[in-house]
Amino acid sequence: MKQLYAFLFFGLSSFCVNAQDINYNLANESETAGWQVQDLNNDGTTWLWSSELAGISYRGDLATGAADDQLVSPSFAVKAGAFYYITYELEQRSAFDADDVDVFIITGEGNEVLSTLNISNSTGNGTLTKTVCFLSQASENVSVIFYIKTPDANGSLTLKKMSVEAVAGQTPEMAKDLAAVSENGRVKLSWTAPSVDTNGVDLISPVDFYISINDNEVGRLYTQTPGSACEYVLDASAYSGEVTLGVLAGIGDAYSENATLLFNLQDVQGEAVLLKTYKCNSSDEVAKWKIYDNSGAGKMVYDLGTIWLQHKLGKAYEEDDWAISPSFSLKADERYFVRYSVATKRDYGATFDVTVGKGTTTTAQSEVLDHQELLKQNGEGEFDTKQFSVEANGNYNVGFHVTYVQNDFSLYYVSVYHIVIIDGVETAVEVPEDNITYTLDGRKVARPQHGLYIVNGKKILY
Image 1 (cartoon, helix red, strand yellow):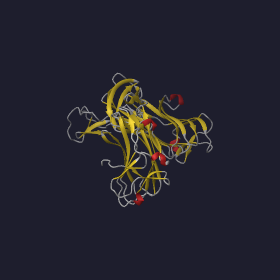
Image 2 (cartoon, rainbow, N blue to C red; image 1 turned 180 degrees about the vertical axis):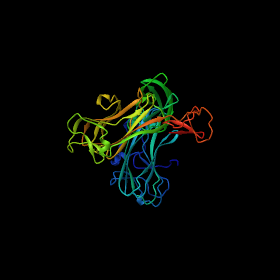
Image 3 (cartoon, one colour; image 1 turned 90 degrees about the vertical axis):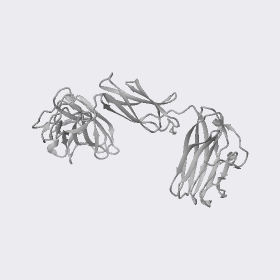
Image 4 (cartoon, rainbow, N blue to C red; image 1 turned 180 degrees about the horizontal axis):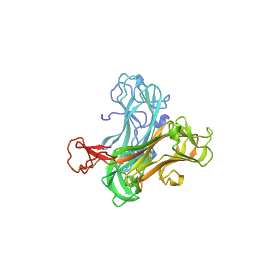
């Protein structure tokens, strides 16, 4: 970075104020007092106040070469360990290329870059208002510098406003994209660290995370880079069934809201194997479903290849209608999930539950696998329920319980998947490469059923 020297002045000499007092509206020429410019390439074109452009402007269209010019604010006092928001407004006009601008602060320690900007890449007007955060390392006087390196023959760039506000610190936003998988009796959490604070300002400090199960802290992860991908493997052996996993972001004593995830510790990772699909693309297929019209406002009937909850177009109805699938066989303590495809409308939603139970009566549908609240799905959309298990071997049915429809609800198909764990499975015995199918413990199988077997020394999923 080039050093500043031999400043040119707009008006009065530089003076120092307290940071909380700074609020420059540079449309007023009187507020340009104390601002300095540096024509580093000595081409005679540099920052200059313009009443027409209502601020301090660099006229790239008048330059003879690429810009290399700095605009420096009056100095202001900061305190060691204090945080400051620096907000500025830049306006670009008639630019054919992007304006490249570095915004940095000059301190006793040197020049700290606060923001590197690439403003617009098309002819026309554009205004950028941006806030950056600065943490002072010492009690001293500092200045903000706008350093333009615009290509030649470009339009104008105008600094219109700048303010500095002392703040208590930065409170990070909540962690994003929280997900969990079971891993050998443990749970691996993953998430994205927040990149901005609760005011939308880029974080300038590393983020700490506090991990919990049912609001009980079980681990910590320190000094993560803002916006980075994070992982943490936790021991959940003291818990069982459905739990609430939480990740709390913190910087110092400032904490985000808790990012939470309802997770079943019985959930497993493995190969999703299709057991059964029921499509709704013919009247014969739909006839296999059990339909209930408990509200009397309209029921699910076959129409153009779908099960469709019909009612007067554009009129919303409270509903209590069901479509319950034909049965399929499940085994106790295995893990399953349901994949289904539905459509509503882009602007008109539907509320419904996806259930599972042992029978085609509504009371037999004993567990809710998924809930969609006013789902607005334009065209066919595919969704997966949570994983589930059943207590006893037998035949089960999937239900769709529709409780509110703004326009219509269409069900295209429902599929049931079995999750087969493959990772970590070890072959129990040595088997020959003889094209014969063996179980994992070495027994020959003439007619393999659904599951994992060994053929020619390799694990094969049937």
